[in-house]
Length: 208
Image 1: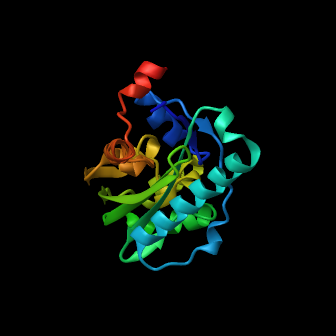
Image 2: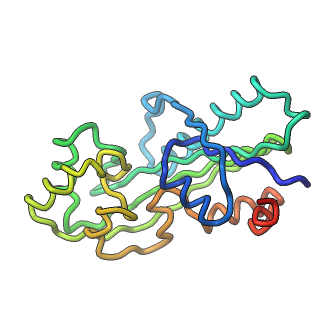
């Protein structure tokens, strides 16, 4: 089976860097899916549904714009993440004030970071959707430190209001579970999903 061209249905630089780090250089094609269309209570269902919707949106565009038989096979990856604190689901903060209030709630707490993963293999007409959860133990920054962190702009771009691989990593005491899941894409889960579709992740290294 020919190796597919991977398309990342996300504008997240962190997700792209994770894929590149394991030898997969994706085409980045953000879905621009309207997340307000999805209102579901269970966090795992929310992230799986949004991941599927984002991947499906991009897969449909590929089908509409490209003759599949004339091009290499396509594999679309869609992801979505939320943080659950005290039973409340949080995505990206709307503004700086929201981010400050969020961090005042998060500090000293243990949150659960859920990331949904959807893989659509256009060649095989197969779709896999799964999610991963990681426990995040937050430090207890002062109000001044919270204001300083939010002023960097970093938490405004992140589900859960922090970037583990950035300045926000300073305020994470420890993780229980997959650490790349917190960055936005669980590499162990991706490896397993690729395997279930019939691909070996090491084959992407030979194709590059």
